[in-house]
Image (cartoon, rainbow, N blue to C red; front, side, top):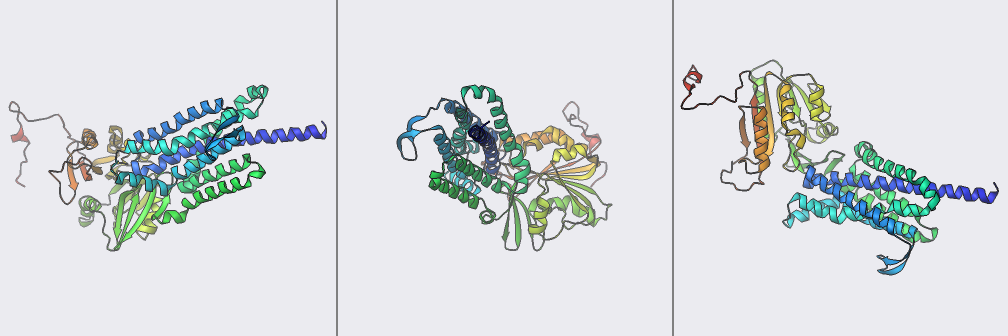
Length: 492
């Protein structure tokens, strides 16, 4: 092989490598951006499957249309959005322009500051239907960049001859799927948990800028410079300094966590919901003090043997924070909560009688054989972020299976106090189906008997005590009435 042939061969290999890098990174950015959009929208529209499905649909359909249009595109005279006129656009130029426009859209779509502004303003205008709001957000800011990036694979195929394309199609699909895999797994399991959601979003901007630079000719240095300035702006918008202006102390794959200091009180917010409060004089939220009053304080005042207490939903570890006698197991999926609670809320370590398990609640119940005297369910921090897998019969049965023979369950639910919403009625039905003979307490200054607003919620406490003689079928009737036998034998 002569020098000219060798040079041509090396150049061709570099070009093919560049195309595969382009395909991998495009797949990564699309899937990563989809997951970032789902994660970042949780504080505003919740984590339900309905809103998640809207965002997924806003990715899949535009992606399909992008594949279709990219395969039909031919170099020639096309309308140019940059010059707002017609001009010749080739394959390389089409790819570059698609990525520039996608970068601009994603700067808004996956930046926390903009999402907060957009959703808050939307709610202020009276548009509060969360599925509709999610659909508007997805249609305007998610669908367009995905549609443009979806054109990458069919456009890149133009760089291969028809003979080589038939041989290399399998490789193209492999590297595209590999990029999607990395976007789905690496961005969440590795990046979001280590560098945070905001930095993972910023990385997408940098990747797109690098791809644009890789595709651009040296003579287009001005445009390349502008693209990198856009990417840098995205990095600044998603920096730790920018998030601290919103009092955010952590932004991982599970939660956006912020801490607010006010009049000697420290408040923990998880995904925009009030989660925990702790003051200089050890005051807590009323429902926490209620739990301590009925479940913990009596064990201390009556010098009972130490109890085993399970808390599902750690918050800021304020439940029993002053108790050094009983043993606590706190369970929460977010591993950052313990450090945040000790540093920002409690201002001290949680104590040797308290153990934290950073894992999903249902996984913990499945893996442990330990039985508890008291199980506190406190994973329901807001109406929009009710964890759907923690309000099922199967979950409640798993909780019940971990009770000691005379064990207690105390559940704090964020529900309509007057059963005005459908979810409040069905959660009540579900809970009672597993835990009969419960008591229900509304932790609120006024009950709101005449309140007709089905969106108003309160801390609703469900209290259950396990008994061997549970009987949900026996009733009194005019024909069979055993009340004279069942009533207490001694005057209280």
